[in-house]
Image (cartoon, rainbow, N blue to C red; front, side, top):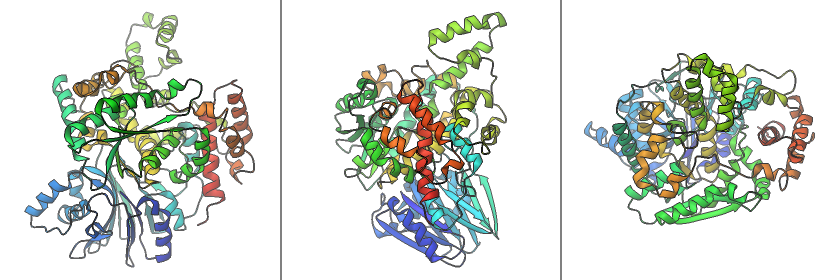
Length: 619
């Protein structure tokens, strides 16, 4: 796991500024490759083949191809054997060398052969072509700027700014952020700097940039037999965890105690043979409703005991969050508002002295239907299929009352498509626009990103709902959070449930086999893992990841929040956000007149980002 940086021209000073900005991603080694046509830099976090043989940038023996690579190729040994049969010789045990030789033999046709998490840049000297490539799931980030015939790219946005790219706020991205609490799609908060989408390749040749998909999410064909599908999931999880245990550095598990991370732990126990596994979890200092906020930590403790792991846990409080809030926003590069970020950041910091690689349960909800919004959307479809008298408003209100799901009655009128998706995702328009200054508001910004995902509609709309989450929320919010907040401490997180074989399998499983009830989704994953999971995990209802952030704003975080929301905290931010309105929302939240955690947190995050990157940050 590493950091990569590059330019489509020679500029040694700019390249080294970029390199310095991502040094935290790879403290073990560094390297540079510079010609008049391309400049490449690499920060190395050594995971596989710790010897100098894994040094990057890496060039083929004939000098034609040079690569900088961030990530892991889990099936590199299998590919190495295939390449050796074709006459290729290897001088290291590095997956980077396998990637490089695979491209030399197969070109872009090597990409579907790769099973891993990756973002890489490859220079073809003879063809005078530069390729940027990102894995299908989007586990590893990759950003670029293409302006006036110059390409700048990096694992992190701050590095592109360090190259001298101009800083301007993208107003569409600003609206997307306050609507969804992150910026989905190709945009970033910086106008002119883009994300390379998962499963895409950018090609620079003869002064022209083209971007095309090399991997796409498609519906079906669906499997016909539930028992066979369940066995395929079981075998897939076991194989994925086995593949992702390859490492020459210590491994552990980030354990919440729920279905996903426990499944990873169980399969690690089945396949590793490494002895006692190290597990890590986070809890919170006692507050009101302490049991609620520490339910994951308590569950993880029981699960660790069941599997006899070497378990490590620590607790955080509001003072800890205030102390790291600004650092977190700095590492995230652009506003991503999520109050569990401090938990991820501090957990990685806590674990780093003992492990360099952590396996997590990310992705299980998006692939196998863990969120209640999928069940509720499917329920809306069932209700809409009923005869008209049975859809009488009073009857629907009774269903809403019994189910405890507010707002369900209004959603019944929304047909399948983008508006249905919006009804279950993000902030309502009035909430999203509340804090954006007049002149910057774009109520229809979401359609610019999401419309294409609904053309055409799938036969199984609920599965399409999950697939869109997996192509937007997952890479642009969840995975980028995991990547940047663990790599801030030079720790790599792997995600076995997003293994490419499982990823492909998930879209061949009908949504009806994934959903059970709103309180417990992932039916087929639970059934597949049932023989390996402790009884207490199987009995637990599905719940979101809680933190006491709402209560911290009324206590340890109040002073910090008021400072951040003050007019003088981030010079110039008042052009974009209404700070007076944000302070009213904070007052209402503290007095308990109106709950406002997400709204207040989103403005706080924007304020810190603006101060770090727009007010204080110097190219």
